[in-house]
Amino acid sequence: MPEDSEIPEDTMMQGDTEVPDKGKMSYRELSRTVDLLLDKVDEDTDALVKELDNFSPEIRDDLFRSDLLNAFQVFYFYFREDPGDLEHERLELEPASSLIGGVTIDEIELLELVFRLDTDGGVISVTDNEQILANFRGKNAYRKAKEFIDETL
Picture 1 (cartoon, helix red, strand yellow):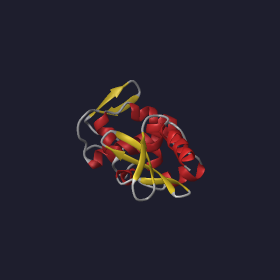
Picture 2: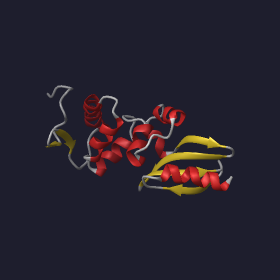
Picture 3: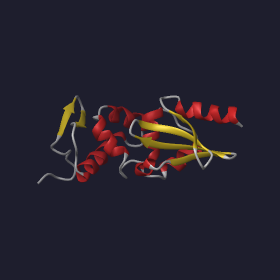
């Protein structure tokens, strides 16, 4: 029986980085993989993102929809920027699984910036709390969403 500190058997080596292979992993295997990954990168979000870049999209999607990472780590993966102290803290306190329904990042007057996951990945939505007014994707999505709000107000 493998020790808890070992990477699951269905992984492969790429240089010094142990990366889960394509396919489904059990929650236990995902959990052990994330524990080892977080131990390796410590508190370095840039290093975490570089490691996550090596994971197959299927494994990453499983991680991003689990409670094993927080919403800020997923936000940073998609947008590669820190949204600010208050927004960072809000996201850090939410498990990644919350992103399926969306996590409010910021409220500006009557509008909300919501980070959520859909089938295509990370999305920043601007809502009026009743409907989505605009969706933004890609590395500059957060900035574009804030600009949209500034132009709308």
